Image 1: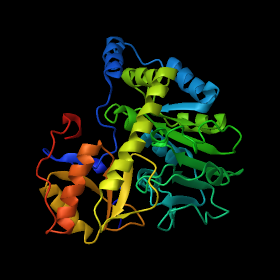
Image 2 (image 1 turned 30 degrees about the vertical axis):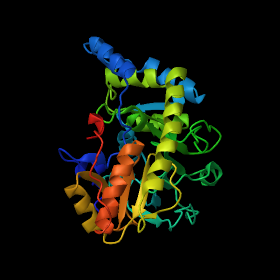
Image 3 (image 1 turned 180 degrees about the horizontal axis):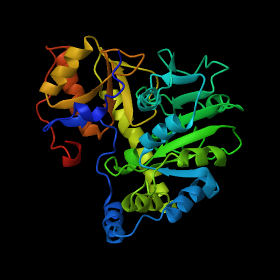
Image 4 (image 1 turned 135 degrees about the horizontal axis):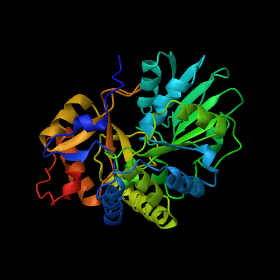
Length: 352
């Protein structure tokens, strides 16, 4: 049975370089830390979500009644599971397991649609599915589905839940549906976790038709999003912040190319990675993962994702020096006769 509750943070340990969690290194940036500290001065009052909701709505060209602020993307998945009564729920895999886990916890049967390698491209969604869940870009495959292919899945009588937690890791967000108001039943879930380094703050939002947003909101307690999280939402949706995120996405593209170029023979890059992580396949993956840990590296195991196995490893994109060091140790594990990388540069503290 696949462990749907396993996440990348379970791979971490002191003194391991973190390639298992996809949060951008060096975040939150200093200006965002200042915003969060200032927000603490307002913590005595109950949270006022209106400014943050307006900021998110403006950023995506939507009215405020199409915006639901949530305690991270994970809360949105739980709200969907509580609010809806699907007759045929289909989770497209391999993908982030939290949506399926939330649906099952609420008592809903879930049908898995397993996409096929090497590209893990969309196909075969049943016509009568009234809830379809997928990620774009998809975690862990790093596949970016064409917006037209995803949009074609929307139809009356169906909720199409698209997890866009990694959308802002792609320059220009070319395949995002966050601004589409014309597609029936489309619910787009976004998060500030990855680009802005706010996993511990729990901050995200969902965009969708007013009636669906209202149905989800009924399932929330009062004041579900904290004052610091609301401040972060408002700050990270400004034009300046979005420009900074775009620059980070472009830097990520170059860093990902450096990682791919450094990988040794014997490593299969699965599909065409487009996000802040790559999916690799190596022989005897469980052994390789343990030996990487022994050499100081934490990577995400793949066998807890439906459709993958122990030979799959998800690796976060870091700076080129870190990637070269990782690739050299991986080469030494795969071929013990290869030269070992001994002059490991001093790594930034935030990715240790």
